[in-house]
Image (cartoon, rainbow, N blue to C red; front, side, top):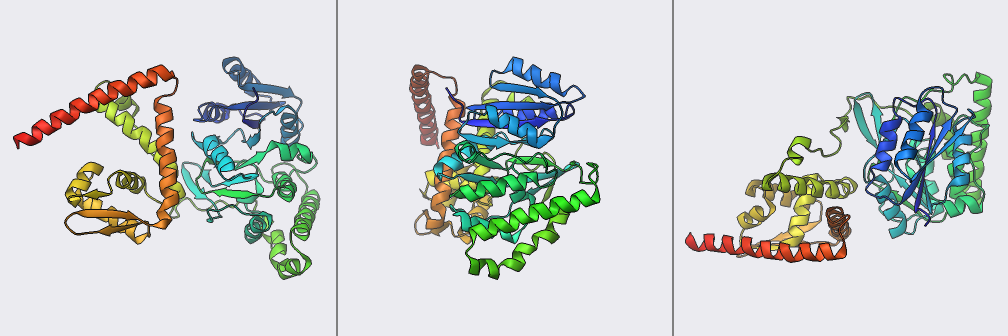
Length: 438
């Protein structure tokens, strides 16, 4: 059976970071993929590391070849790829555990030819979020090109590692990387792909960790004359792209904007100062858990594991909708208990203090997601802007259930459900007895 996703990683002298990269792929929540590692004539232990992963996991394929550059390495992998979708990584970067799942889900839910995702830029021990498109809707080619025009040569648009492609489009039009280009080679591939794609979707959740260690053109021993030649060639592609996408009148209106590419291209991936607001210490950008506590036995450890797993599922919803994890959890609670006798009762169900509940209700009301109605009790009404968020929360709950029951047979799941109902009944009866004594 063919895999849904082909994940391609070129490798050259990457033994210091390769394990981190590959482990992040093999530990994905989404498992229906093949991983193609291309050892581009590495002179360190990278080739042996690739082979060790192939021996451990049947999803891993390895290509060993003489050094010919990253573009040729990706092209070689494309010849072997069998997936419906294509996903790319660099060997010194890594992805979040839900990266492939979120990319594939976005492509299938929105029938997109290209999914573009937010990413984390890592500089030393600091990390910041990068993403440009804030429209949660499917875009056509002109709309996507309009966003791209505003930030010419931006890494968000220019690279291939924060995107998911349809392999059928790549093969139908025989799209490949240009091995003769050592600058913006990803961008040229993207421009050609976009000309053949029709539906685009921006995943507003960071799923990729980009480590800013790549060398500049000078570091690659590229002469100034050759650098200028390549930039002119790339701009010619870029300029010609908009002549195809826009009609002549719109092209003339936007020509100055298009020519900004020549200025912005020199930035080559600007790294913002680590002290700016919105940056975190690496490891604090996502929720964490205490491994020692998670490995303990007993009902408290079980409750902790369950809560942290739910947090992991809710986190992508929070990131996409600019909510805190606590607010996403609060919305989930409110979707279950929309009406209560008092705010104290509602806070008790949500597991927060009445003060915390009131603050959450105020923030969610200010965002236009809910309306709180008073009277004898308290009632929460979800407003239209909350509907997509509620749908995403439902997906998160489904992910939570799938992770819990992974590997269980149908019969085991039924048996678990029967036993859970008995346990739930016992707990309810014990609580009701306790209430009667008060």
